[in-house]
Image (cartoon, rainbow, N blue to C red; front, side, top):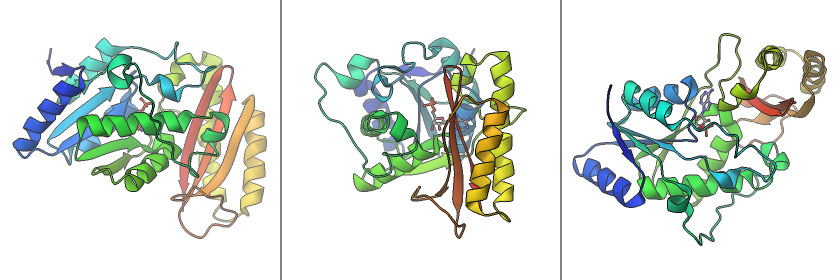
Length: 281
Ligand code: AMP
């Protein structure tokens, strides 16, 4: 069994990264909440192509979960995650606990206005403040040359790019495409909450989005969005939180396609919330 370092303190991670930098290594960080799947591993592989040392952080960040959300039931699978990281050639797993991350009196929140407010931000108030705060802290703690995020959480990626630019954080932000299962369902740690019947419904989401993306090349945006809403309802999604076409960079609503756009959706199935997005060019 391959062994790699597992580090739990800021002091230790800083020492190791300093040493690597002294040896002229290019250091990458993939922030995760654990319960690792092929989506996460694809980002490790991608970033391995442009970094000498890859760190995966695992921290189920309580600050990005609302009071009624699933922090307590979020899967904790540290041993299995460690094995996956070791097998794929990650150099180090960084897993600070809550006390190490926030201490007894952390009072600072990083809030990215505008881009954090609507879409997922509208139904999950404070969520992106929690994400921005923990990512800013992880980037400060680890000080990598490059950090990688998935397009699965497209709005999160936009928020992080904005934050890194605004705060002059010296890190290159990379992103990787969404990894899907054999039915096209975007891989997510939360898919484990779905029953067999819900899984069948869930895998309609990507099909509807990809159909819509194709139709957008010859049908008006409003008509496509309306058809998409009907199809999602017919497929059995219980609540459609949003289905919207946005500019791929600003995330502003798009009612006519000119540049690069993104179709984004959030839907509910039972007690599970699913998000997905597809490019529209
Ligand atoms: P999480 O552990 O859910 O916080 O995700 C950690 C990182 O993995 C985030 O940047 C996610 O966007 C990314 N990620 C999660 N699922 C996927 C997926 N199916 N494909 C690509 N990236 C993903």
